[in-house]
Length: 154
Image 1 (tube, one colour):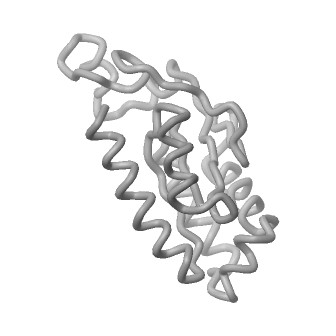
Image 2 (image 1 turned 180 degrees about the horizontal axis):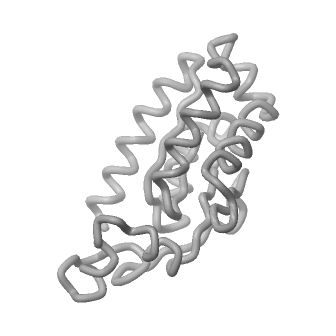
C-alpha cells in the first residue's frame, strides 16, 4: 500500500505543476482510499483539484478484464489487487461521477468534457488552450474506454 501511496503522491506532484501553469490535467489512476484522495487534493490545492469517479461494479470490471488480472488475483497469483485482495473505498462525494455501465465510451467522454467545460475554475485556468470539442471528446473516449473503475482528478 505504501508503494501505491507514493505513486499517487508523485502523480499529484506532477499534476500540480501542470495545473499551476494553466493546463487542464487529467490523471487516471486507482486511489483506493479516501486518505489517498485527500492527500492528492491537499497537494494539488483545494481550489484546483476535481475528483472524478469512474463508477463501475467489480463484476463489470472483471467482465472487461482482457488481460486476466482479476482472474489471477482471485486465484492468488496477484497480491494486493484492488477490489479483490485489497480494499477499495468508493468516493463519498466526488466532484463528478461517470457511470460506465450502460453507457458508451463516447457518452462517458461527453459527460467528462461537459464537466470540464462547466467547471469555472478549470475553464478560467485553461486560458484558451482547450482542444477543439470533437478532438477533446475523442481523446476522452479513448481514456474512459480503457478505465473500469477508478478515481481520477483534474
